[in-house]
Each structure stands twice: as C-alpha cells, then as structure tokens.
Image 1 (spheres, one colour):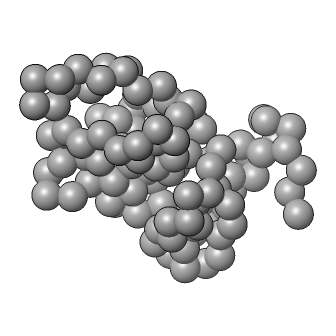
Image 2: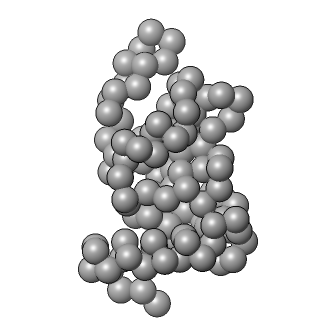
Length: 108
C-alpha cells in the first residue's frame, strides 16, 4: 500500500503493520519500521487490510500477528502498547481464535 503524506509517498506492507489508530482526523500506522501519519479514515484502511486485522475500538485497528496478550479490558501488542478492547471483546476473541486456526498457531 502506498501512503501519501506531505508530498512524500511511503510504501507500507500490511505484514509490517502492528496497529493503526486515528487521532484528530489523522491515521497513524505503527509498523515494525516506525510510524507513518496521513489524513484519512480508519474504516478505509480496515477495508484494505483484510481478515488478519481487527477493530477492537473505534480508534484502533490491530494486526492479530502482533498480539502479545489480551484480557477483557485491553489488548497488548508486541511493541508493548496496550489498546482498549472492552467494547468488542467477545467478537475480538472469536476472530482471534479463527486467525490462530488459519495460521496454525497454538493458543495457550
């Protein structure tokens, strides 16, 4: 995916996205290589990235690949960031289990 921000075009691979968030009409994509900001809608990004991603809160879009742990209140990503998940927790758990089955991961 190509992102344009401030006249600069940046290539971002979906597999490198840890999570994305929206703040003041800007989408901030947090990747393993750093952060990229652009004006846009999180819902547009959500449509592009596919089923390996989930929106646990209206402000966040997470990549299941980088989930370290979770509970009924939050999801902690591998980079240490804790994100709110209580609104969609049951749906999150269901989708995360499906993701792990697809990827053949063991859940403990």
